[in-house]
Image 1 (spheres, one colour):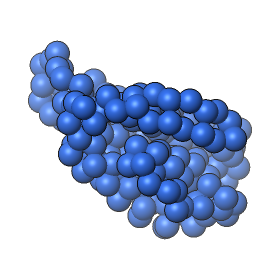
Image 2: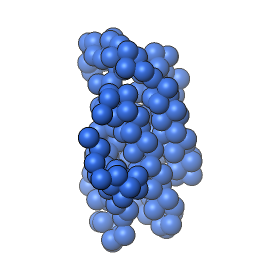
Image 3: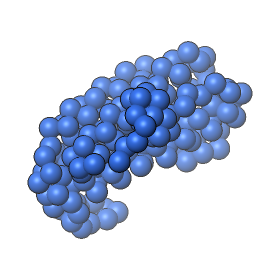
Length: 171
């Protein structure tokens, strides 16, 4: 599988998993989105907002544009806003990443933040973005379990590849 096909597939997976997660949550009581639970971000809405804020940040990095979102500074996000914008941001990522060729993915991008600085190929930042979102979606499911939800959607990457895309192999 080419790097371009792999990154495009991961983008589609990320979009699908975020859409499934938001759809699942949309069926739950609104008050539960704001209930505090032990986790990296202490509520469902804060966790989803974090996923969205970080996807917006990395979108700016991989498109080499100036970050315009200040979402990461929002301390009391509305669930309707984050549930609406996360799938849209993920779709934008899918569109952009699918437009890249191998050379674009291998292009070195310099990153300077208060936490880290250095240069990596664009695809490394893209891969990090997807790993990050997957990590925090897992935390959202764990918060849901603490709230008594036992019906979280299956959003594993292999499930996406084999069942959703009806693939026998991704190699």
